[in-house]
Amino acid sequence: MTNSPGPFALDYPDHAFVFYSSPHWLALVVLLASYLALWYFRSWFSTPRIDLRTRWIIASALIVQELSLNIWHLSIGDWDAGSTLPLHLCGVGIVLAAFLLINRSYLLYELVFFWGLGGAIQALITPDIGIYGFPHYRFFQFFGSHGLLIFASLYMTWVGGMRPTHRSIWKVMGITNIYLVFIAGFNLLVGGNYLFICYKPENGSIMDAMGPWPWYILVLEVVAVISFYLYYLPFVLNDIRLRIVNKT
Image (cartoon, rainbow, N blue to C red; front, side):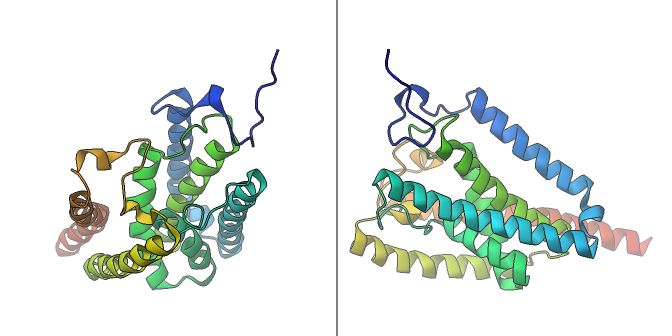
């Protein structure tokens, strides 16, 4: 009788991640419940003492999980500058979210809001974690990190009182494209595929419906703009509602 590989093993053949399996759905439900709880208890979180502690706890969790991921890659011997640095939009967003929670920079909020919602939601729907299904460490780290990124975005909106503007959409798009150019050069240097601009995720994603390289990159640009406007739409609708209320 052979021993099953542990939750931190490099090879995990008996528990490969399956899209929309019970663990996938359970992770999504737990995260959704946490966001609903945040909305319901937003007044309680707004208490200055609670707010400060909560922001530091979330920021610490974001940094600790990112450090743990790199330690895990080092421990199993597959750390590589071309694949394990936090340079995808979600990875950068996680680091920026930690700083946002501490210093409440509006520019960081704009980036974290659109990168966090745009990247993390898509990542949670179609996770790119290969063979590492439940209960492997990578399963919990992946859903925890992306879930916390969305939580930080919503927290600074609902509790922190921040909100994006129409100008934020195009500011973030401009920064995103400047970052894309930088990452394209970095990919060439290290043989990486950050932002998936060299090829699509190997385990399937919405990019599979966007055509071949390099056209899917252009489609992603359009999808990004559309998604940014969708995330901005609730604020537009609320502004319209307030104008109507003020006129009555």
